Amino acid sequence: MYDLAGKVAIVTGAAGKRGLGRAIANRLAKEGTDVVVVDKFTVPPRGDDLSEGWEGLSSVVNEIKALGRQALAIVCDITKSHEVDEMVEESVARFSKLDILVNNAGLDIYSSIADITDETWDIHLAVNLTGTFLCSRAAARKMMQQGEGGRIVNIASLMGKVGMGNGQTAYCSSKFG
Image (cartoon, rainbow, N blue to C red; front, top):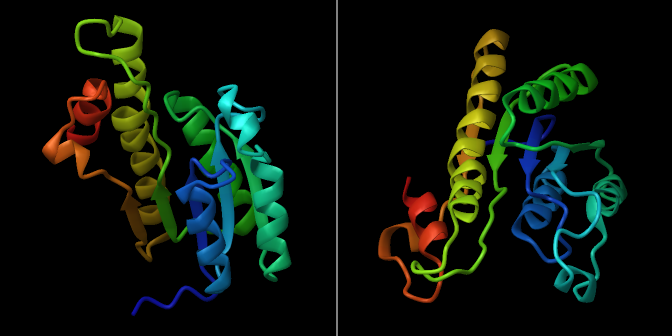
């Protein structure tokens, strides 16, 4: 078992109230990890998130601190290389190292193949595929520079392998990427 005590992790896509990113960040904190939580949004990206009780990054930070760990919230668009590089640098500046990256951020906009726009297709690939690459590259460079290695965890989806016919063409394609 990998000992997580004293480690530093970045978790992307961590702002949702009931999301996997929040759960991962909290579990890491329970195991003794300091956590940088990252998301693009400081306000709900969709109106239906308001009904789910959107709390954003600050509430995740408070939860982690309540578990006795340090936390940092960073707003970052993972589709932009310079923002990702700055996010990793800020994380290391705060915690002096980076041990774990969890690529959890993802996007799924429902649209049939006949109705999907170029923009919808492009944003799926940008977030789900390119964003994962950009975060992995920036983290790997830092981990290698530190000389101790690290762990990169990519949250995938079975839908990338089996697909779905319910308006998730772009999502399934980007997750298989």
